Length: 179
Ligand code: ADP
Image (cartoon, rainbow, N blue to C red; front, side):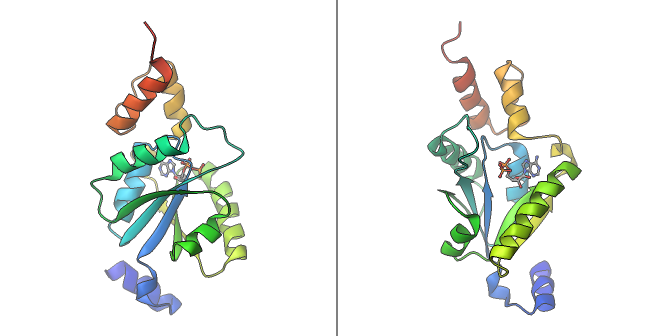
């Protein structure tokens, strides 16, 4: 692919290093914004490992297993996608998977500071692993897992914001047993 050739002829690295990339995140739950990033990345990278990160400082709505299952269902039709989970340092995980880069999505300016800090720290830990950013599609710029959970919690319609399996799972979490 042309983009890959350009990237690697400039850095002098080998073309074969690009194929596998890790997309780490909380995915609590996956939204159409995440899915858009994964779909677009699948046109550039041969293999994307979408991996749920166990973040000890967050209190998730969905368990690891639930988040993995929702990711698997949502990405089943996208070529080259594998779903996994991990805890600990992202860089160690990326190396253990023999991947050459980390994929992240960028929304508004507010994402930039945190992502810049994280990418810089990861670079400090291992200069061989690059972080690749995909800009959000404008129609998903406002979309986050937190916003989706807030809307779903108060009975709002999230069907245009998340895959169907996710809106069903949210319904189950928040409104199961209600009459
Ligand atoms: P984390 O807790 O690691 O930020 P998230 O699940 O919230 O995990 O997000 C994972 C990645 O996906 C982050 O890089 C985030 O900026 C990106 N992302 C989340 N929502 C969107 C969206 N609507 N458009 C583009 N990127 C997004």
